[in-house]
Length: 508
Image: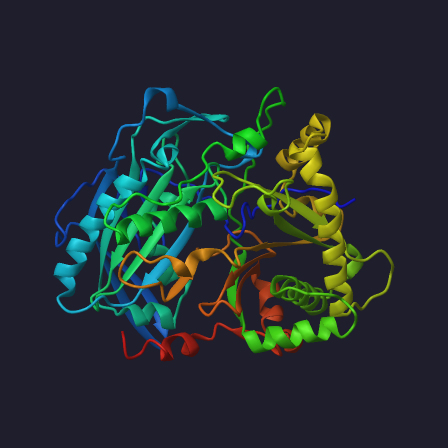
């Protein structure tokens, strides 16, 4: 039976990032005063600079902090809903934020006026949607619950100066992307907001919207459902949503009850790590799937073949062996519980599967064999965990042992001590991120922050829904080899910026 293990990717395609920070954040050229509170769009109280190198030239990106405020629910939360219990899965999750970032094309003429009215509408609709997601406006009471006290969500507005949106899309480096996330997202302070949002306005009229949610309150499915509901509320001008979140789904299926309380997972940033973006176009994925199917493996998915290919290439490029190289993947429990859970269930409805696809000393492994092993592991997982975790035969001893393992596991370091290597895969493919329409069209690109841990691979849909963007983190010395691996680059393109920008050039 596949064993469970907790790694630093903590959702269906989301990661959390931890730094040592104080009351004033200062990194990559950013400096924010946490107590600054402004309200006028064109106030110039805080100017920031982020310097990048592009084609041998230095280019400066300016950022002005326009306003910082707290958005509270439009309707007070009833007293009988004051305490929101967390599930036994939620209780071990870190409180750090999971980041997402949505880019939108220019809205039209009169951008400054339009952006001002748009921000007012966004604040109003956020206040309205928080009445449905009222725990997101509360504060953590302890490891097991949220006090729904309507203290609200953090809401920042910034103005980008001296650059078009295309500047960032052409060179989406950490230096350029980091300022677009709320400054407090890096490390959640005691009593901090569960939800932090930043709206970045570009001179061309484009927008970047960053939504960062504490991972302890929900996974990637939860985050993207929330953002889509907020977008719907904004687009429909406050009309009641036809679908509402299932806030009690997690605690009903996975109640903490009398289970032991384990420490929350701790994850620290690895400063030796660098990230690269590899894009697998639909045609290349089709070729990989055909390669697998031709060897009798039925119905290989996009995520399975890309996961197996990256794993295979990493083992080969870094001089590892399949016998000592493990693979971890996140499994969405919503789809495999009996009966299946609602997709709109709020909370962390996921668990982890760790596989060592090889049981013999054979040095080489072909893609079909690796995909087959992944399928076998997932099949075994589906046979065991739904019943043990939430079925009629719920096994409290099994749950307790899984929680103990998850809380005590320390990233890939335990594997290093045993002369083994762990690659961690997480996917948010098929999530409705590109359906997030606030009323001015769907996003032109959706991404997340860089990954702070090593050997982590994060898979996202391309805008057309058929390709996959893989954000890969490795130690710098390993990445220098991996990113040049000829086998990998037969099917993946390294940071193909021109493809993204050519299609937007007329707009930006």
